[in-house]
Image (cartoon, rainbow, N blue to C red; front, side):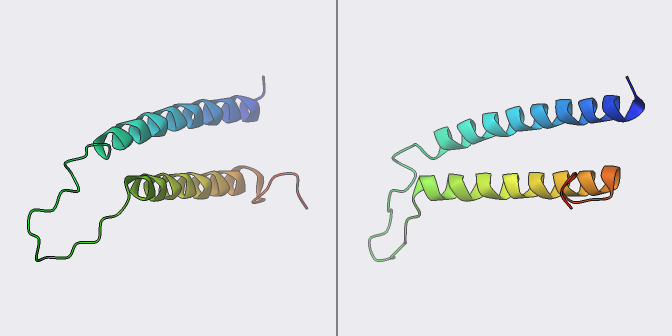
Length: 88
């Protein structure tokens, strides 16, 4: 096994661990926002616009995957010299 293929195998392994961790965090955040008492109004004079729990979780997940994509692009550029390896 060449050093480059072993390096890429390690990168794939760490990426799989990171995706598993983010999935677990997503499930925990989804449980946090599922509480019905969290969006309860305490003062009726104050108008508070409630944000749906799905939107908050979706935006958080979107940001995490965007950062994961940027890290993957930098890693691909550092290892191969191209943003998308094999694509001219």
